[in-house]
Amino acid sequence: MADSVWYPSVEDVLSIHDDILSEYPQTGRGVQGRGDIEFALQYIDGGTFGTAPETIHEKAFHLLRLLVANHPFVDANKRTALNTTVVFYFLNGYRFEYDAGVRSLLKQFGVDQAEVDESETLAYLQSHTAEIDLPGEIEAWRGDLVQYGLDELTGGSSDPND
Image (cartoon, rainbow, N blue to C red; front, side, top):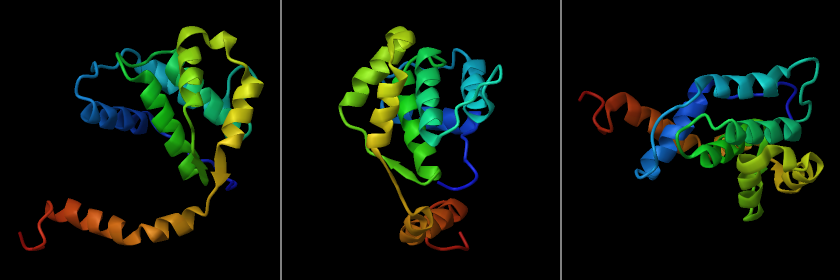
C-alpha cells in the first residue's frame, strides 16, 4: 500500500450512489443524512475519541459498516457502501474481489451492526483483496482514459471543431 491513503469525498460517495440509481431506476431516490456520509469518511480518516482505524482493511471495514448501518440514503445503502469500498480499495492499490458472502455481511450491518464480528470481517476483507500495480492498471487504461477525456471535451464528437 502507498504511504498516503486516498479517501473518498462526500461528492464521490454521492456520485457512486447516483451511478447506482441510473443503473437501477426503480431504486428510491434521496439522501436522508449527508452528515452520516461525512461522519463515515471522517472516521475512516481520523477516527474519534482517540481511536482510529489504522490498516486499509480496518478502514474498509468501517467504511462498509458506517455507510450501511447509518442508512444515509433512502435506498441502495448496501450497494453504495460496497461500490464505495471497491473504489476505496482500488485507489489505494488493492483489488477487492468479493463473493456472495458479502451479501450476508452487508445485511448484518444493516440489521444489527453490533452483531458483526470485526475479526471475522477483517479476515474476509483480507482474503478477498490483492495488491495491484495501480500505475500499471492506469497505463493499461490509458487509451480509454484519453478517449474519455476527448469525448468529454468535444461532447462525443470526433471533430474537435464542433
